[in-house]
Length: 111
Image 1: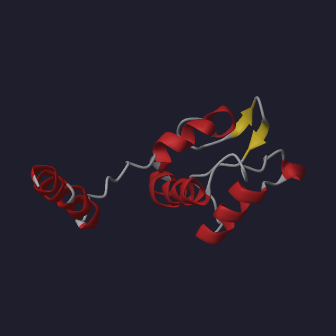
Image 2: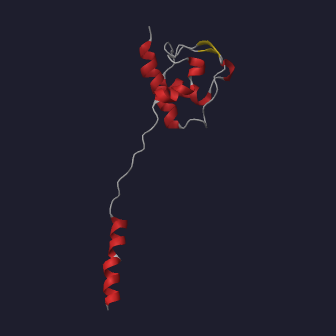
Image 3: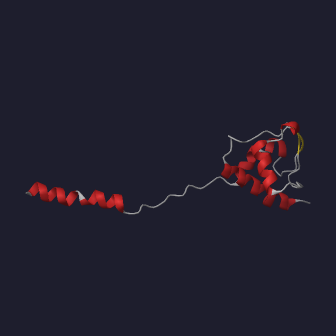
């Protein structure tokens, strides 16, 4: 009888834990500015590009590309112009963050 009472007291507790809502932990995502560190070899820290180790990189402060076109270039590259594809290296979230950084932060620095 004592064992049955003990089991009945212990058993509902784990079942209750399984049913209660658990907090969702949100892991911070990497910002576009941090991701841009991948691009600085060719496009430089300020995005101006020019003659660099990778060839002649586009000036991202003056890009006329739309947001969608920037996403496409980051994803697929422009091999004929020396721009590599980052598909498989950066996930969709990171590519979108990087494109947003280019369009909203670097483009805003245009002189």
